[in-house]
Amino acid sequence: MPFDFLLTVIASTAGTTFLLGAAAFLGRSQISHWLAKDLEKKRNEYAKDLEDHKLSLIAQAEHAKSAVAIRQAGALLCLEMQYRSFVELLNCLNILRTNVASISMRGTKTKEQADEAMQAVNSFLRAINGAVPFISSDEHAAFLDCWRTMCNQVLPHCRVGSPAIDFDFNDAPDRCLDDSRDITVGLLRRMSTG
Image (cartoon, rainbow, N blue to C red; front, top):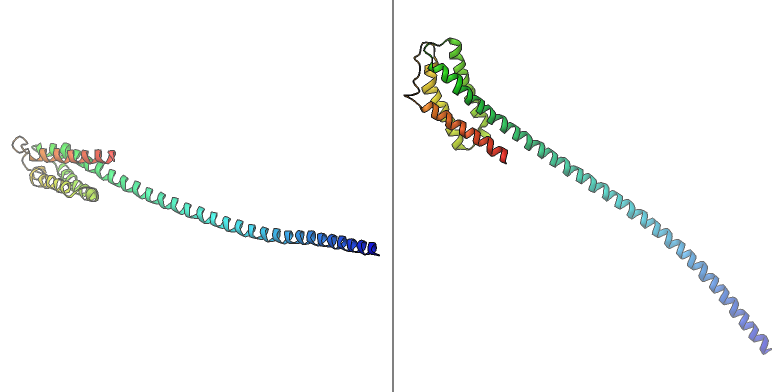
C-alpha cells in the first residue's frame, strides 16, 4: 500500500507536471501569438506613420525647392532688366555722341535731322528713367545733368536754321557725355562682378 500511494503520488505529480507543461507551452504559444499580432499591428501603424511623415517631408522639400526656384527666377529677371537698362543708357549715350553731336556741328540741318536729335535726347531721358531703380541718387543726378546740358546747349543747335555749335568754345556737352558713359560702364562692371 505505501508503494501504491507513492506510485499514485508520482503518477499524479507526473500527470500534473505534464498538464502544467502542456498548458504552459500552449499558454506561451497563445501569448506569443497575441503579442506577435499586436506587434505586427503596431509595426504597420508605425510604418504608415513613417510613410506619411516621409511624404510630408518630400512635399515640404518640393515646396522649398519651388520657392527657391521662384526667387531665383525673380532675381534673374531683375538682373536682366538692370542689364538692359544699363545697355540702353550706353546706347543712348553713343547715339548722342555720334549723331546728335554731328548734327549740331552742321551748318545746315534738315527737319529729319532735327527730329532725330530730339528723339535721341528723349530716348536718353527714357533710358535714365528706366534705370532709376538700379542706380544711386548721385548717378541719377549726373545723368539728368547730362540730359539738361544736351537739352540746353546742344539741342538748340540741332534745329533747322540754327548755327553750328562750337565744341572748342563749349566743351560741357563732351564732358557730360564722357562722365555719363563712364558711370554707365562702371555700373555694367559693378553688375558683372556681382
